[in-house]
Image (cartoon, rainbow, N blue to C red):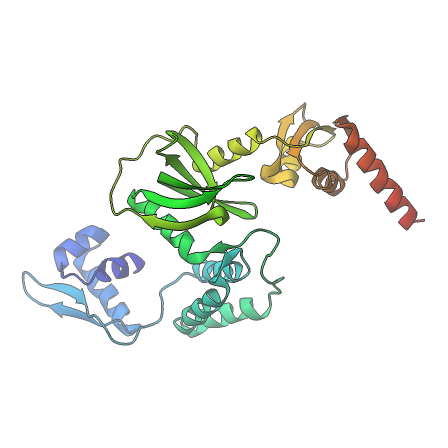
Length: 311
């Protein structure tokens, strides 16, 4: 049914035999599914005869959406996450979109969507990371999709604003920030740009032939750039816990190397020691700090604080 509706929504005329062949069903099954769509409110015109076929009538009131239960929940959860995300301007838009989607749901699914909305507490917009303009994000995404060169102003960390001419490859959402992975034509090398530092982005209206990214993925490329950035502390901790458990706790902000079945080496490059202290506290397993000495002092200070509070 969903595949049939997807084909009909192109609003082209589909000969019956061609439509049945695309769906790999019999003519009888196709006619039955067309009737089901009509029962749901979709206006499907049909012509009889040897060259008979079907076409979805344009216009009119939208009928209920055809969604599986898990798809409906995914839409609700996704829109609620967008409403609390870091993309500026999407909070109100996401609420409006969620309202429209719920209105198009059949009654049974609508009740489930309403339950998700009314029985979920959200902390509100996540303001710890820099905000990103929704229009800018859309411009970058479309340029990536269409292989269209971009020109924009960019202010790198501790530097003046410069003009960049790039071949956009992919957008990456990592942690609390968005990044654009692109080939910089002037520097003749690949770069990752923080989207919150991009202004005056404009597509050129041209096209380029995509280059091979020198990494497994755009996400891997951005992460490799993090490792090249100098940090104040190189953290090395030997943890008495399986590597998968430690990797789940540290996420993308550290490297975990197995050291037997129940031990591993945790490495992080950080500017502040609060984050590795929090990870180690969350794990609640024995560990030994190899470096830096400042981390040992931080752990000792936190231990004294908690010990005094529990006395």
